[in-house]
Amino acid sequence: MPSQPVPAETDDDELPAKPLSADEARRLRATLHQVSPLAVVGSQVAAGVLGALLAWWFTGRAATGWSVAYGALAVAGPAALFARALARRAARGAAGAGWLGWELVKLGLTVALLVAAPRLVPGLHWLGLLAGVVLATKMYWVAFAFGRRQR
Image: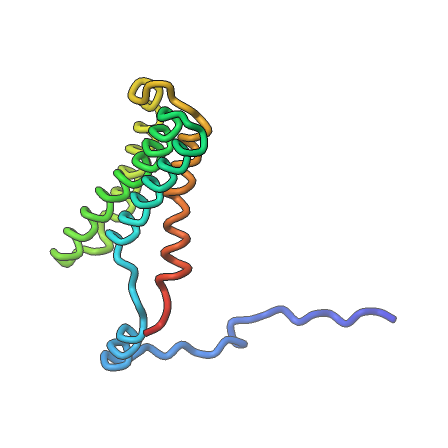
């Protein structure tokens, strides 16, 4: 039995989007919880410190703990600069402008900090450094997963 052709989706199948009025947009914003960028950076720092202490305790090597802490710092430091820059731009009414530029600065600083790690961290433990980077980076996901609840 031959199969029936599947009709192609068209734009006519979609419902028209109705713009929100100012009052509707205000009510929608009131129901959404926004995650503070500084809270995300704080959680990155906390995860880095906790991870560093646990790594030091499990391995008995201070260098491993410092490597984890430095990896988290390589992510949290540039993220703090990024959050501060965007907050200042938002205060001036230019929230969206310059976002990509600051994101590139953040990524560039992170890469520079990671490249400098062998010279700055005595007895660098590469796996510890990677663990710190992963811990701090995953805090974005944690903030998104648990911080975006409705009021």
